[in-house]
Length: 337
Image (cartoon, rainbow, N blue to C red; front, side, top):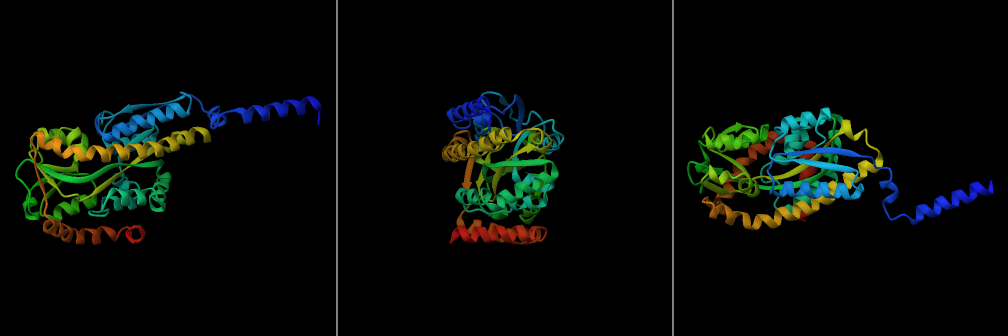
């Protein structure tokens, strides 16, 4: 080997060893600016998670990669955001995982009522093999699943009456996320489901186009639904993981180092976001009561009746995704043992 070449190679090797961890990959990162769209307003734990994600992406890319946040649904509904993401005009969207059933039907499992007993169970499932497998299947639809964050357990609000019995729900016109299982479980309670984009919900409640809605406490507070809804019922009838998704059209233009920055930041921000959400939830109910909402917690006997009403809904919707249902129940059984 030429002595000069050997000396140059040795110097390059020594310089590489001297670099701080991650610096070698950071050198490959180029300038990028991405848009992140989500439905909830600034101050909501999901937006706080988005802020953390943007901070991590900037730090890990040496400031070369920037994420601009667009909260409050300013870039459109979840459905239109998914379409824009597939087309590459929006790079990142954070949304209810169940909404992705319109792309891959198995995501409907996340909207099954009374699926998870607590957040710890949910974390283990979505961060485990089943959650990763479902995100991987989005690639065929032009979507990259980066991570799962948390919206939380859903409760029912309405402007007509207090709900202390399951029968009290009958006749209410309730806004639901537009997918089949949500239509079915509301019908099973003899109520009237009304599919509606989240961005249209406050106005619909204000104008009494719908009687009520169902969302986690953090959403009810952050979106000021207490201004147009008097009655809150604690049901914990569904748990919503949130998928952080990326445009595959844009993802495929990024190099491995850039993809790693985004993937790692989404996962780390997710841990932070869940912690923030769960810490905030403890005080949210008190804030809603202070804002004038009348809160009722269903008695255990009423929750049991609610679960019983859901059995035909679960059986019907499980027929379309039997393998995913089997995997989910098997994983939950393992966790509970």
